[in-house]
Image 1 (cartoon, rainbow, N blue to C red):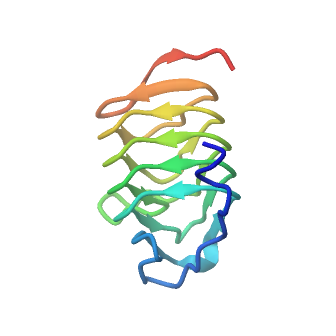
Image 2: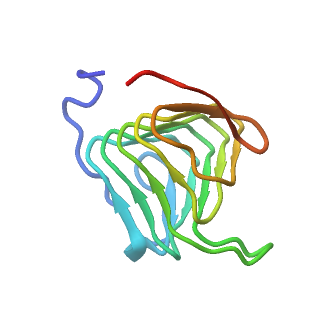
Length: 133
């Protein structure tokens, strides 16, 4: 992994426009991106109520992260803590925190907080076990 991020730089993130890596953010003023993050292509981030992605987070392609849901009116900040990983095609709903070094499996629908070091997956995502740090 060290080589992968050796020349990492913060991407230019413009309102509603794809980055050079083909992911995009709406409400970019409420978006906070940590150091050496990896966000997969075609991921959508709605940061109306704040989205914080801490250092060394990995997000698979085709994910969606919502701090606002227009379907049910839920709203709240989303935090992806240091070193967590979110599998491809997963959805994170408003008000959720994914803990440090947690792993969320692909195609998961995350509606509740996931604790540090947890492995979680499913629709809705549920914790299957806690890994040793």
